[in-house]
Length: 163
Ligand code: ZN
Image 1 (cartoon, rainbow, N blue to C red):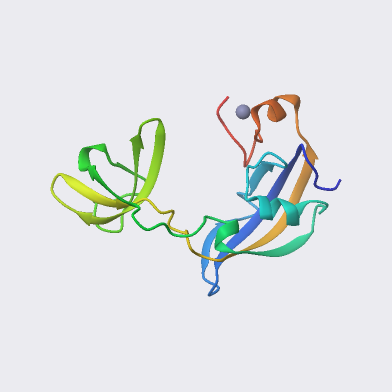
Image 2: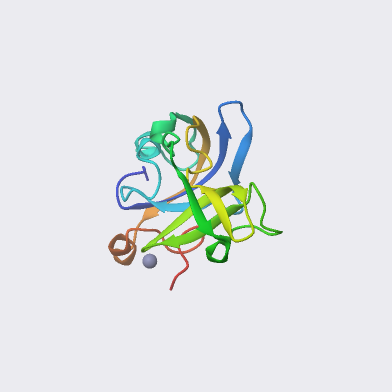
């Protein structure tokens, strides 16, 4: 079965930066499942995956504009420390990745300066401005259920678990 719209595609991948450093791994034991054609992953990745089959391996280079975009200037926000949620463990410090709510949006950023009551948070995505490479292996391709298509994402292992 070839990858096409409304297929649930399971992939293992390694994400590398332009210098070959591994940034993220989804192994065959803990792969990613996504619904093809529903903007679950970067559009440029979908283009490369379309038509592939189980067992296919591919290496895809994405320019920053095709991935997390360019770094924005003036993306530093001052946020009261009490509103900052942590994404990792340990004490809040410069370099910590944090989340906070602004209006109805969850903003993720990196602390660049920490005061007693407020922190300056760089709201650029940590990988903004970077060219990336995905080394991908296609593990499974199946038809999506009507429910998955209605939700716009994959369910089950590697997909969403909100039911
Ligand atoms: Zn769902």
